[in-house]
Length: 454
Ligand SMILES: Cc1cc2nc3c(=O)[nH]c(=O)nc-3n(C[C@H](O)[C@H](O)[C@H](O)COP(=O)(O)OP(=O)(O)OC[C@H]3O[C@@H](n4cnc5c(N)ncnc54)[C@H](O)[C@@H]3O)c2cc1C
Image (cartoon, rainbow, N blue to C red; front, side, top):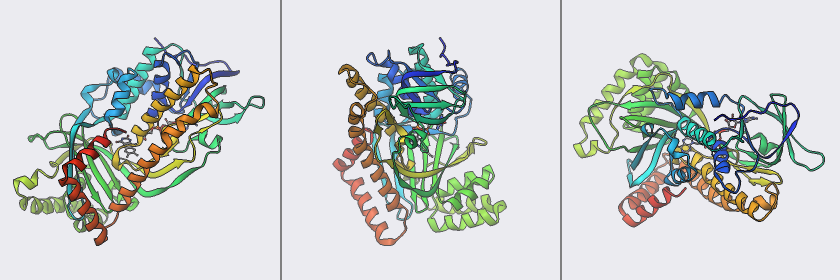
């Protein structure tokens, strides 16, 4: 079975054109083809990057090391991916579920641990995308995925107002419904003249693939320490591997990315344990005297570890001693929310509609919930005989998803702000809140149940 590619130069008509082969776009394509009501629609997906070759090659022969883009999937997302027949294509030996998250305040030390059955599952983005592609191939002969094809321009058809896409291949496509799954800089959002509001966090998210020292086993746990410069998180992968997401100031990110692998590993070990004041000294040293950094951190960590009782030792992650070469990368962090997700002939999904700080691991999960909602709305429209591209038909998608996303974006934004300070009254207030949360079981159970819903 193969995906068909478009080859003619004239304008082609499609019922649904999806721009973007990221997680949101591929999930939408799979969900449309999985739907008995929508599967007969002519659905096209256009992706500017090289998508199909790398995803197929991952599916046939995954690399031995874990890749560095890893996301935390909620039970709700996995349940949806199972419902549309995608999860069975996931390489399960490369994912890790965990039922324990330990989060603590880098200034006061106040700690909270959440327990719940399969709170989240860590999965490489490429694993998810290749499973989605496998499902699309399994389902249909009709969805054409055009990769290495950029949407260069979008205009409105003079007669009926349908979006007309000019592609880098020279071809053009006209869509009854154009869905922008095209990320933060969404060309579709710009075409539809939808405002997006928000701000940059003036922080970078550094990612890397690391491994805990062999010899000691701990149940898979998510660790997140909130430093005033941003949270540092270690999220579990199989066999003692872990995925780092370290949000930090641009000047610190520059220093960290310039270090050699050993010095970088040492800085991560320091960041999950040492007091904030000591970390400031270490950043200065990393910048001015990187040759002596590893020795200095080893000494400081030995002093720190010697003071810990066996019970206290359990409250910190194990030492990291391996990093996958070239796995370090950084991404700008921002909050943004589009004023609307729908206009006549247009819908926005995933990061095209909203972006969030990764501290709660929700960005991709929100996009999956968008897809589920949009597909249900399109199914209803089809059953009622509506034109699926009209704003009237699309409105229920916006009214369902906007408030839910708005709440989550707000909560994550407040968390970032509350924890980005070391001002004493705020530190006291947040630590008090964390201690209450950690010690009042029914409040904590409620929070855990909400974490899995998104
Ligand atoms: C450090 C970090 C950690 C994160 N961790 C998590 C996590 O644990 N859990 C979670 O849920 N989320 C997480 N996220 C968020 C998550 O990665 C994103 O929300 C998700 O990848 C967005 O998917 P998307 O498909 O909407 O957009 P994208 O992945 O941005 O895909 C957009 C696609 O559109 C294509 N495109 C754009 N313009 C054009 C054009 N003109 N023509 C053709 N194609 C075009 C692009 O090439 C791209 O492939 C994290 C983000 C960061 C930065």
